[in-house]
Image (cartoon, rainbow, N blue to C red; front, side):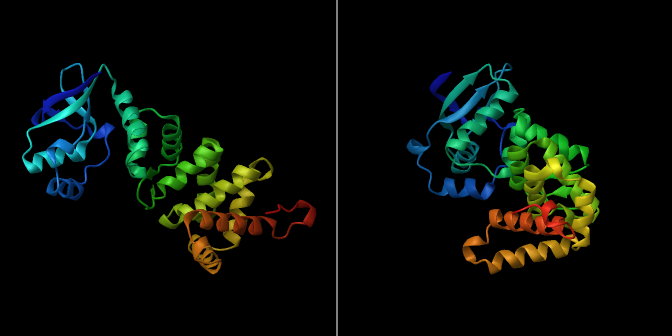
Length: 256
């Protein structure tokens, strides 16, 4: 690694596979108040073809372009693979300005991070993408990753299977609160739960739209401090317990 090397701004490159999405408005705000001496070091990977790719600092780099600054100081790393560049980006940004969940997800895939790779494999198995809610897309990036991280890819796989069996394939099916509740339920009680029965009982309690409305209603009734995502997932989890227990003898019921 070479530290504090002055490089031409025009020599720097961006690889979208190892970077978050560039937000032009943010770069413009930086450019409006930029002080050349306070830019700091741009973290760069010099690849085998001698091209210099930014690992961290692309918004400062873009701000320099907008402000007409022609050179910057850089921390240059040599011999990194694309995977290593992506992992270095994640490490650096977790220490400072955390990227958006979807950007972290895509960069984590490039870096081969198991959490992101395992989640992606399950999504692909179900014909789903991550980042926006649609018939074939799940928008709850953090919620989905939380299921895999806490309970494993198998539970996430079962979660998607139960949701689709209960509500069919629609944007409402992939609601983050519902998926989070199913994931928590299966993560805790999956060893004694039949997934097909769970799907039938959830459908008997209402459509995905009805579930979502009930989760929001109950969460809001619990007060302002309980209106966050975590609270709503917990509310969904409790509603699933209620649905599962309906018609069962007390000895066979699951306690909250």
